[in-house]
Length: 272
Image 1 (tube, rainbow, N blue to C red):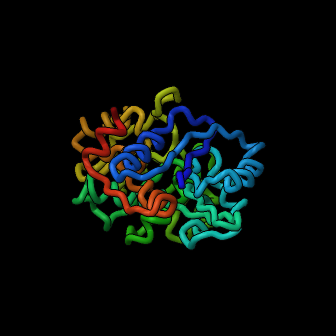
Image 2: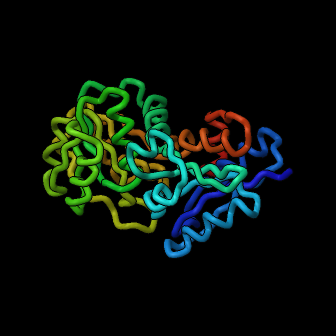
Image 3: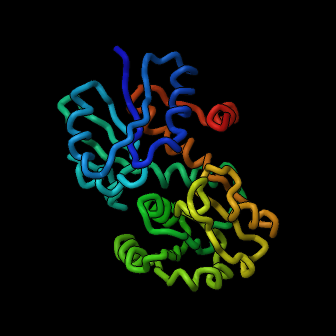
């Protein structure tokens, strides 16, 4: 039987997930397909109802569907419930939807791989308060980061995320984020700013200490202006491609029955 999975988003043409999962399907000789689906928000619910009936085992969800997909699920994992957002869906044989969030898992795995000397004892500063930020902030707290500061252009969203995740999460005004960076060991951009086709991320790194690690979840381009600036100032930088690769592992395992390996060959294939 041919196995089916895919990724939904609006837009979706920029996603490299089909190339990623396609590489694994070929590597392991699995009879399956992983397809991109352009799904507008107004038809999300109808789409999720019909896909199990036509043979899909599950989906990845990208912008702007992560929070809506969580709300539409029949069952949710603890890590999805913690952030009220889902990036991975599994469909059961009776058509139920199970929602998971592997963003945080993928981010931490990538951070450990690319920046093994990252100082976990210092607070982290996160830019953005969307679905990806939720998973990342929760994962940072789970692995022992003492506190996370969130700056978002719409301050109420940062306040809402802080209220969801607890007292160790502090929302601050966007305008004050550059100054606040001096007290943090990790800076993470979870917004789409700096992505190809999007406005640039304008962020002053002059207060950054010599031992700060800077990560960007954007992977197109691989070296965003933020990372280029940070690297020129001596910071250790972490690109967003590794997060994409690592967050995909649990979904692939659930849909196609094989635990895949993240390695340099995979990075080259996805970047090709």
